[in-house]
Length: 186
Image 1 (cartoon, one colour):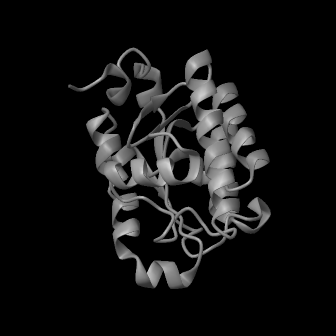
Image 2 (image 1 turned 30 degrees about the vertical axis):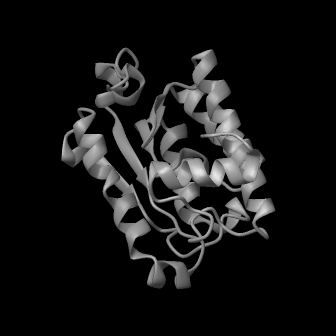
């Protein structure tokens, strides 16, 4: 059964599609990029998710300048800065990431991004669904996802969520990681 949340039913409006869909691609180190091509492939594949959500391929912008850069400091990520600028100028209607909370390791950066999306009217999307940061439940869920990711990163020796022992690649692995780290299924 496909839930309406997974396709953004009722959230995605025509004016969202008049703007760009921004796919943010990032892995924490050059070594991860070299060793874990599957993660990179899945992230670039989000362009297809944007098209499936109704964006023309010509309106999907891939931001991959941060591929191989740590998320520890947003100031050292030109791709993140570009995403923030595009949001601030009102050019983006949808931000996609493999796992939304992966866009920023630090809670401050994550909540700044949620707030910018809210002010710009932009939606966020990952493999689990489409989120409107102006909807109370979506904002709460986005905040929880960011908090869980930050805690998981700290718990895993400050490893990036994209590191193989940390980054789940399937829904079943996500449940295993969640149960191991938090005692509850994802």
